[in-house]
Length: 436
Image 1 (cartoon, one colour):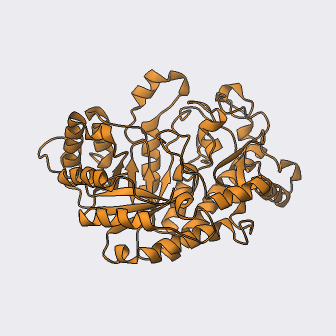
Image 2: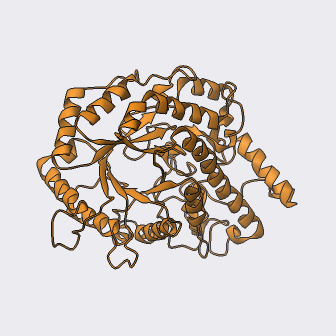
Image 3: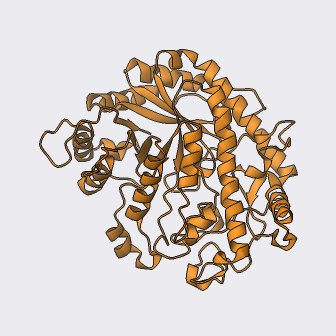
């Protein structure tokens, strides 16, 4: 939390092992809760400089995530990094700076989109806070940009660094495969919703839906998400369009600032793979997360179009998951990760943007790796479309165990097209393998 690099010698040894098996680089979060911890616009980058120098000495590349969210409490989190202390202090006085659910529970994982343009952060808007942080990073590490050690910047757009509403927080009791809850009850988003309803001429629409269940509900148990439910009513369509569009507008605003800060450097955005309830008509879990992707409506093409506007790549998760496995483990979830992946990949490729990916859960076996390889460069694709990069989660002791590292080494070779003759052997000129 003082931005000091812990156990740099051990880290060097681990990175050398990665370099020895031809991993291209590493991804690392630049946490605002560490760097801008105590006072606004006072940035401490010292630990990151030491880390980046180690990575560069080993001739590895860097993908850096601008992480404006809390770490802790979600899948894969084994440390706790809160938002900056000065923001948490403001949150005690004005808890509406956080996303809020129907019961009034605040979520301090990230700031609500509702204050993107509100000067409630000691005279700055949330977007200005993000921009100042990104600009400071760009100036501080100019040499790493100039020598191309930093090859990409991923822009955090919400909780877990992903572009979606925090609709399924474990800290509020959510468990898979619950549908989640809408997160627009803070006073700023509530005001925006009411304004949109007034403009539509239906002021009584200025509230989130009733009867949408709770975090662990199933679609068929709610009046809003069940087959033929209110999600498909005139009000339901109005609300879901507003809710999803506000997410896209948030991305649009932040990426406009990111392009100013990082002009000339590739940028990307991470999207959640919310595959549960995908086989139902309402796609309830996607709707509460802000993806208006119900049956007969493509909710991902508008996002891809917004990313295309900013020449930003899409980083998508859950490529290692098999639909059959999900059906066996959680048949009631009506999940289809493979169907979702193909929908999102095609939306991105149709918009002519680069697509990268990463695994959603730990993966050490050949079956999971083969699934990733299948998607990395789809066979029989007439246009030869493929992933531009893959980031593996994550560098830890389990990965470095002899058997696991051997399997991973083979996976890296296959991604680089070095195995020759096998069904997953190819030469991906743009393919990058990195670890986070």
